[in-house]
Length: 283
Image (cartoon, rainbow, N blue to C red; front, top):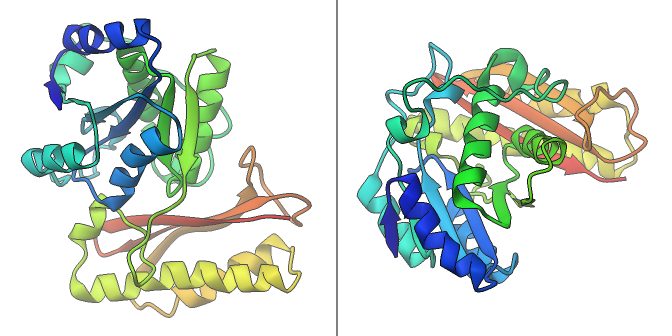
């Protein structure tokens, strides 16, 4: 497995493989990898048909707000590289900030509408940072297909919109949420949780399950579905709810009564840790 730290090295690695007709699969990450990330790397080859699989590890400063956890975001470079190797990656792009944002960098990408609700409401500028770094990574890697986890459903929707709007020659593929055996969605930030916070965080997946159960009985009113999830989450004394909302699964527009597929997405803080999760409810 190659470890590449500058743009020229990435292009020198990818170029001959593209000319040989190999399909290039790409998995962007911020590191501190868990099985959710590794499932994307394995799926790039087994499901997306990539002959070459590249991951990136870059904690992107532009998607963190001034009071967020950029400086304390968990990092484990040696462990991450070993996991990438075991997952079958052919190369890892591990750039310093100066490579991704050299002196004089002025461009930011903004996707309208989809970035306004949900996480966009409480994390202004977050998705501008995500879109900018992902567009740069697409341009650097020259990938044919890029894989993202569906845990951040809004991010996936935003990146698909950006890729369409900018006519980027990349297929953006979502992969199902990977969960711990007890139902907690895997996240690099789970390491922040105390034992009590982690136990109470299980109300997130249980709340989503309550909404799915209501959906299965024919409930289609968004506020009722939200209330079903909220009632469960509120049983956790430490839960500080940012949002629990039903949105159109395609464009994240507001929904009163579901006539087509919707996503029930939530963000909840336990102590200093903000967790997200979702479930797609299909008509």
